[in-house]
Picture 1 (tube, helix red, strand yellow):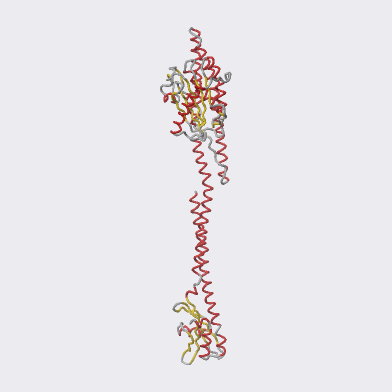
Picture 2 (cartoon, helix red, strand yellow):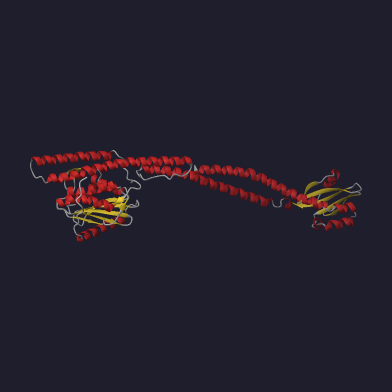
Length: 477
């Protein structure tokens, strides 16, 4: 569209310039010619008073030489005489042309060598016709015409260039909003839900941008409602079920205890099925919602307060570091809470009672690193643990019935900000789960990842020096 508009404007402007410049150039040439011959007629009239007084050769010669054209050899007088014509001055016209003008009695312009000759007839008192010849060089006939044509050409080129520039700017003003709209539609289709289109440009494109933004807001709202539903199911069902399973494990042996554990296991299976079904029914979008965010320190303190009560019952040592100041991250509060509950639930589920664990928060400028470490047996196959939707026997605990959704929830939260999730060996001897949360949508590079692991080791060394902290009693939600 942009180049089409430029081509149309170029063609129209070129036609307008040609339509006006060519006739104007011809008019300028005619004006220059008329000016030169008008001057020649004026010069011819200068000798007329002398001719009305005398036709003496010497007197006429002095009169011719006293004029500017005569002094420059451009003026001649043809006086009729017996047997022909008396020529005074520099003659260029042929006798035939002079005779024709004398017979016709009107001025004439004839072409001669090097220019043109104006033949002006003048009547004497005796009735004879004297022809005054004024030579006009070709340069004077076209004097100023080349300059005028160059100026017209320059003006025409300037008009064409200016019109093309204006058309290009207009084309950009029309095309850019359309390109932004197309790019935003593609980004939204790829899952970047924070994509919006500036409402600018022509009226039609502004209306399209308003409609697109409204549609994107509705899509985000629908997906947010589904995420809230999934997070609510996870928060309200999985957490108390984990506590219930751990309590059922302490009932000892007996038919009633076995039935209770079997019922809890069946209930966990049904809840996992519901959560998996809810997740499969919503689009898998890596993008986060623009403007969503929370204070990571506050959310971590809150969730640690909830889990610390169960940790105290099981004799687990809990360490918490890096949450003494506000750390804003571009993750919605329910999503971060669901991710922490998934990680802490895995600690309680897959490590023996009395196993210590810790949570650390580090701010690296363009990212926030959350480390969840434990002193358990560790994970033998981190890749399998990170595989989405993996079910079967867990690598750490050997338990059956894991849905594989816990770490996937955490991974999706990290990737929605341009970060990632990594599993390694903690300084406590067990598993270390590192969540890299990008603050500006930047993905961690290799150097940064190495930096993240070094931070985790220093944090683990610092945790050994810190006193045991238990945050709150927390009630189950």
